Length: 370
Image (cartoon, rainbow, N blue to C red; front, side):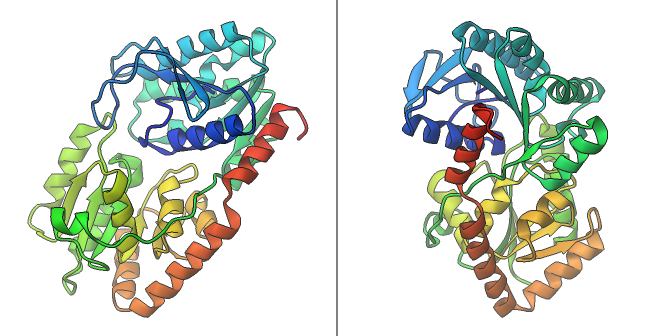
């Protein structure tokens, strides 16, 4: 499997998906290799392993990476594809549009290729013209050369049909069951108690629109709840600085930075509600996770979010601060409705999003049975 970053990391949705699929396939007896980006972890700054190793039964192979902004992802994809071709596998599975720029190399080598499109990444605001063009090139390469394309949303399926006359297979991500974690460490660290805050959790990048949430929240003067912005930047540290500037003057707003492990579980478990105001998403893992913890979720009305909610949450018009403020104001005045929507969301995720189902369908695609 070839993706942007590191197997086993919690940097983003792609890494989570690759990890969950790979370890389950390995547990079923399949030989699985993930080609791992070398260099520094984007979110934590820690150096990655430079040796080949086995994790959860998966062979993890670090590949050469030019550790410079704008070159790291492209170089890692190129060297990973070369390494995968040399290993002569039955299938090479590319994850995300950027790495798919190298998919024709595998196609030319006569190896079956599968591409998972996690989202229309060229639309993301953090990319400049050159970056967007490269990612769009990867999308076109997948549409032209991939033996099969997997998409995570019905809207992406429609897009490939309309744009490239290319059929795709819809396989949603899964989500592991979640258990409530009492506010322990988050209370010690930040003074956060159960139901005392609204939560945004994700990368601090422009397309997720956390500034929209900050503006909507600051205009609500009738609550003593806090707004927690949890996450780190991804090549957009200037944007993160702008968010801090925007939040100035409101002591209720807390930036926690990147969070993982026990504090992450506690943040999800004890939030009054979770908000994802994105303009662009693939299939947001953080939204699935918040729903799995039984949180009431508020998202923009883009199909990628609204389809996941399936009516078990609240939406507002994309990009509309006033509409978001109105939804939040209503929910702050309706704690019983919050509880009902959270319970519905948890039940929906547990019934509809299974990693095992996704693995079964993906393996069928590898075998050419779809």
